[in-house]
Length: 312
Image (cartoon, rainbow, N blue to C red):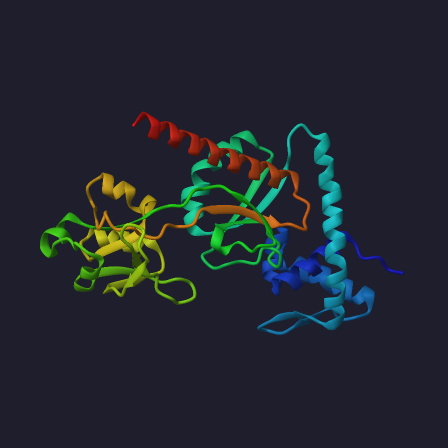
């Protein structure tokens, strides 16, 4: 009986899971023509259609779906067996595929990537930055980085950052022309830069005082955006007030391009970020190296903050 080769089964799984020959080719670093040839050869030699192809979509046939369900665990075991040889290497090696929220990519991962690569030159990071939630199992990522609220309970999660505070700010020119709001309720008389989540909802402006119950202010303004960059530039140019995590605005506040307002009012914080991966999957050596590195970097940052607070 014909036994499919690794290249053919890998091509089939990539096509069925990506629902695209082009995306499968990108994942496996092959040409779409080669992927198509491998799948076609597999179908011909098995004597059954595995993939339904149209000009607009790619989907598994019932036979293809059954084969995918049976093959995926086998290929994962095959990969894990090969990677177990890393135990005999002096350093872990391989590729770690990550899906990362933009905020975490900018302020958690980017500042330490250089040190990680220098420490682990045989590990490659393949980072996909996406504002939407991504199912790491379905999309074949090794791990993800999201805030704690977005991590499913059945995942193993490693904390890699603290909570991050919000601030409200505006340009000195805007404050000079319109004045600074003294209470959150006064924001309804001001122009505000708003942000929209991937699901279409607007980011709320919430406040409290002395740990009292949070309340929300309905703000309005001439600009609504999905990314912070355009909003920050608009605020610097005097378009209106902006509310973002402090790390986004800190350089412009330090340079005097923005000034904060409502500092004595409490605002919800961005939940801390976690590296997470499926609990049922044995952690691969390169992913373990990354998890250990990010955990240690977070602990060093915490220690440094405590030392700075003590000195102050």
